[in-house]
Length: 376
Ligand SMILES: *Cc1c(COP(=O)(O)O)cnc(C)c1O
Image (cartoon, rainbow, N blue to C red; front, top):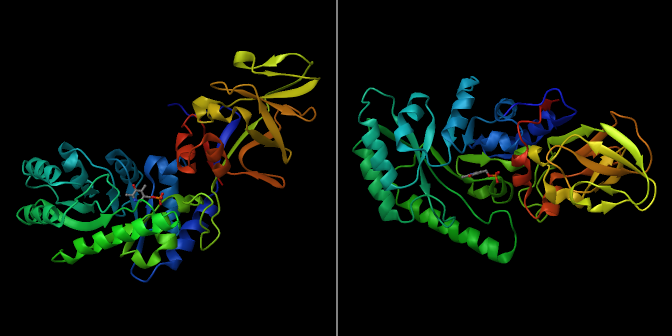
């Protein structure tokens, strides 16, 4: 997708905020515990390579991504730190991962057999580093029983010229809540993880269980590496439920400018479906951004900030434009904040997510490359 560099709309990414969040966490960790910054989905919409570089300066010693191509993007940008692909790669791509020294997730014995068979065709290749995924209750990928994990260990051991067990990990599904059911489930998962660990003959290089929520609120479980994602971007993994141990500074703002402003007489309608009709003379401005950029239609009755004041959106959000109602005329080029601070007021990603009935993770990922990103 082409990036709109000749347009009046941009994502502004504050590198100091990223640095603050990541460094606050990495300085809190026990000695010997590493922080891998999770930069999947183009760094949660913030730009993977740029985020990875800031993370490295802030104390991250490795990165996690979801798919192999995201790992290759980091390698192409010259980042040589350890990278773990958290999703399941195709066994036929194992040679690529091994060649670029990209660690992958070992989700099942089926996957391991197929991957060993693939790598056996390339005996001179580097070994593939894998992290055993343990399904302790997330129900997504990984081994559910100690016996199946042992089968994998045996298969890996008999192919040690091809496969190196570099890590073991699990993923918690309820670490972001302090409700009693969530806490109980968290401890059930911890218990199962400990049973797996007791059955491992040797501890691999990396033992890790923590996403942001686990590291923020269950630090004692961390192992020797954490997979730090959403909180690094300044977003509270629990939404507003649980307070973080330090201030999280949101790194992303979304800004645009008024491209058209007019006085509309009473009784005229605005936008597709004519869903809004003026009741008196009203100042209506048009903004050059829409749902194709990730500013979704569910926001049709939300608001934006102009000169520090909340102004309502009127009419439906179009693909590339939408309209707002102003208290008075403003000049073409007036700054409009869709996410972030403007004067005394602020619109958080969290409030947008709430409005859309989703979570801030999803809102951030939806911003398209059509929006240029500016790093300050
Ligand atoms: C995405 C992901 C993370 C990061 O989670 P956050 O909540 O963003 O910190 C960690 N581990 C795994 C396995 C993931 O898929």
